[in-house]
Image (cartoon, rainbow, N blue to C red):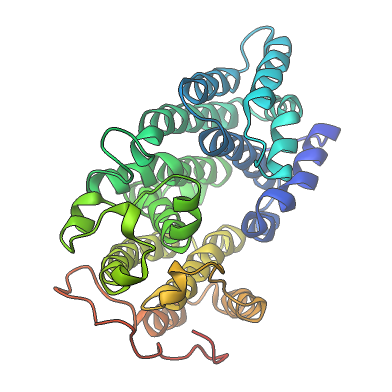
Length: 368
């Protein structure tokens, strides 16, 4: 089994993780060592890339993303180059950038130091992911912001392409890290790789559907203009009360697409060996949290309101506890997934229900 000597840099990464991601702070600790450390460092580097994409505008964003990708290869003299990168990145971040994300960028040298302590296969897989993510984010980021073509992405294909660069690449990287750690996973890599992108896409599309208003208020939109146009909408009109019905119909169709990706993601989890309990839980928790989030979003006009739609802590505890009990029982997991997704639309549906819809069927805890 691979080994890793802990250091202050690795400890820093573990310490800062909860401030920048509640979900990954929950599920990374269930991974076995040293996989937990490898995934922590990988996630933080991807988070830095995401911060640069969100909080820096124009050509500076693409240049910084490319430099971050280069630094993850740990070239000779990377320490001094990382210092210069950090100074420039901090200088051009928006004043409104969240403080925990600013701190993470300020400590990029420590994250890279932690990466340097991992085995070469880990470094290669992480650098490959960050390079693909950074280039894709840089090219597509401006497409989703106000430009000559307006807000939004051109088509559903572009929306899914954006999801791939932001999260599907992470699914690919995680699969390779899992296979590096576990020979039993490596033996199933052929089953996992084709579904790895769907896993990331499902989670990212769920976030997009949850954050429609927040993204628009930041001057971004990741929804497809062609689909909006079918209902006579432009991205700039999504939050107008007079267009609420049409906006929710588009939203419902995209929930169906996310549901499709989640079904592939669920098949990914079941392809993981049952004896790898930590790896399964690591994947099951965000997957089922995405399912209950979609249940709460579907047909809920509050998604266009000023208050974010959130899953309660009680439901989060229920998801974590239930999946802990069922983690090795495929038949029970299939039953649970089927029950929780029964009220979600499928992408083959011709027309989602009219809005507002009736309340979704309840969770065992009584919350949808």
